[in-house]
Image 1 (tube, one colour):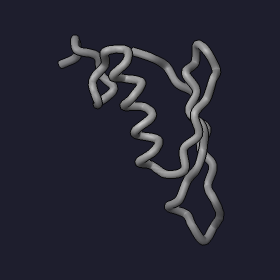
Image 2 (image 1 turned 90 degrees about the horizontal axis):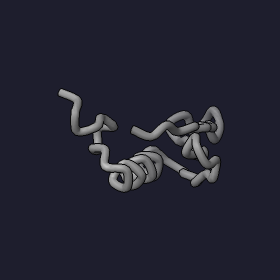
Image 3 (image 1 turned 45 degrees about the vertical axis):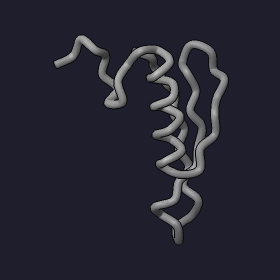
Image 4 (image 1 turned 180 degrees about the horizontal axis):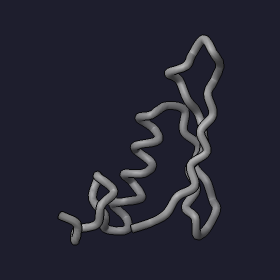
Length: 63
């Protein structure tokens, strides 16, 4: 399972449900920006497919 650094920023008090931020794999530090929860999830899901973990973030050996 990979580790990530996720930096989340809110856009402002009038848009509390809207977020923006950066996801960085802990081992390399090259981040990808996201502008909402769907983009954040897509980045994490894309990276989990590459390393063989499931969409839940658990590896195949977890019950």
